[in-house]
Every structure is written in C-alpha cells, then in structure tokens.
Amino acid sequence: MKRIISGIFIILFALVSMACQSPLAPDQGGEGPAKTEEATEAPVVTDEPTAEPTEEPTEEPTEEPAVGVADLCMPLELGKEVTVDLDFDGVDDTVLLREERHGEYDNDYILTITPGSGSNTIEYPVANAYDCQGWVLDCDPADSRLEVVIDFVQDSEDYTCKAFRVNAAGSGFDEYEEGYCILIDGEHPFTSEGGFTADRQHDILGTTDLRFSGAVGENGFKALTPMSYNGYPEGLELKRDMELTVVNEDGSLGEKITVPAGETIAPYETDGESYVDVRTPDGRIGRAEVKISTGDEWCIYINGVNQDEYANIPYAD
Image 1 (cartoon, rainbow, N blue to C red):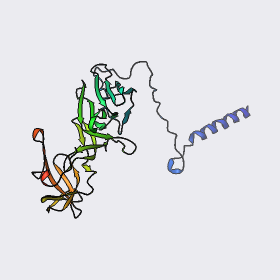
Image 2: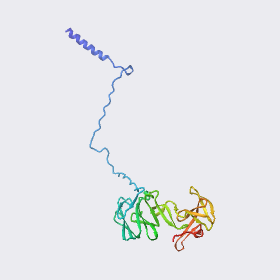
Image 3: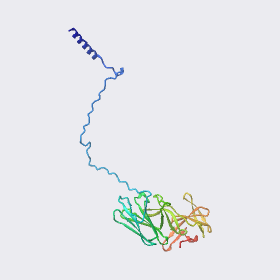
Image 4: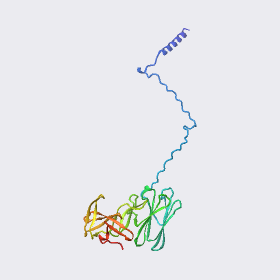
C-alpha cells in the first residue's frame, strides 16, 4: 500500500514540475512559440461565367493597305497566259500577249487583259509590227497597282510603248503611249526604284536616240533621269554665239558664259522639253533654254532662237 501511495506522489510531482517550466523568450536564444497561419478558404469552382457579357461590340482589326511587290518584273511570253492580281483586290486577273502571223514581215500582236471579275476585258491589237514584247511591272509598290507594258516597232523603226493600268475606281484601265524603246534584259535590269532603261528619239540639236531611266505612274510614262545623248562625238560647230549657264558638279547652276561662233559644242543631256546641256570646248557643262512649238509651225528654239541658226543640225531623213 505504501508503494502505491509513493508511486502516486512521484507522478504528481513530475506533472507539477512540467507545468512550472516556461518556454525561452526569443531574446534568450529560443525560437518562441510557433506561429500558426490562418486558414484561407479555397475558391469555389463553378460552371458560372466569371464576368457578365456586355452588349458593346468588339473593335475589329483595321485592314492593312495592300502593298505591291518591289522589283516585280514578269516577262510576257507569246501565247502564254500570265495570272496576276493587277490591283491587289484579292482576285487574280489574266494577261495574254499572242501573235498572229500573216507573212514573213506581216505580223499582228494582240494584248488581252481580263479582270478576275470577267468584265471590262481590254483587247489591244498591234498590226503589222516587226516585233513586240511585254512585261508586268510594279513601278511603285506603294500605289497598289501593277503596270502592263508592251513595246513594239513598226515601219521606219518607229518604236512605241503602251502601258495599261487599273484606274483609281477599279472599273477599267487607263492607257498611256510614248515613243520609247524599252530595254529590260540582263544588261539593263528593271527595279521599282530605278525603273527601266529606255531610248527615245528626239530632235533637240539633231535627230538622235536619248537614253534614260523611265517608269509608269498614275499620270503615265515619266522620265526618272535626264536623257543622255549617245551621238555626236565630234560635236556641232556654232554659226553664232550661244549663251549658256554653267552646271556645277553638284547640279546647281553657276555663272553665265558665252561660247563664240566657230567653237564646237557637244550635246550632253536634256529633259526633252525645257533645257539642253552641252559640253563646252573647255570641258564644262553649260545649259541653254529650250522651247518646242508643235503643230504646223513645228520648231525647236534654243534661247528663243531657231536651233537651225546655231549650227547645221543633222536631222533624220
């Protein structure tokens, strides 16, 4: 009985000792009582939409403007149809250049352009031509239009080129014509920025071919560079004094000079309508004013004087 009572006292003493011990404070090297995190309520997953739909229409993406293809140059092979979107409306059009032979030197060429809609088909015939070639070009990729250009030669080596371009309304084709001979080949490549190489016959200070870079735009054919003379290496001897304005190396105009009669000038460049540049005896470039009258009183004036008064002008027969 005493052993039982002694055991009970020992157990009670141990319990009292444990109750009297307190945990160490943090500043005494203890970690302190453990902090408990408050329980967070888990979100309830339902099939209901998280936001109510609104009746306001959503903003549709804006359509980007159509852009052309830089340096696009598609030669037209005789009898072979070309499929291409000429106005970037998303519908392909067709272009066909074909030949009809009637004899050794009697050929007809027909250019046919058929819009994807099938309406407003254009058919342009070239009769009695010795040669005809054509291309689909993109002279200006920013205008969302391609140009169909053909070049042909007829009697007396009269070169002609025609351009066809979808008009601004998209309802038909604008047509343009010039007396050019277009050169597009390995030696004379086409680029949208530089255009095509062309020769044009002119009579300013003599009948000759002028070479330049050209293109087609919304107003037709245009020259991108001045027209350079290829002929007259010997020059023209003046019969009267010619007043000129010196063209500086940077293209600006400088001092006024006079080349006296008896001296020789060599035609150098022109824009074909308002001025002509010549090389002077001392190697400088001088500019003279040009005015061309047309019709029955056709005449070319240099500085207001008939050019025939300046030199013996070599015209073509």
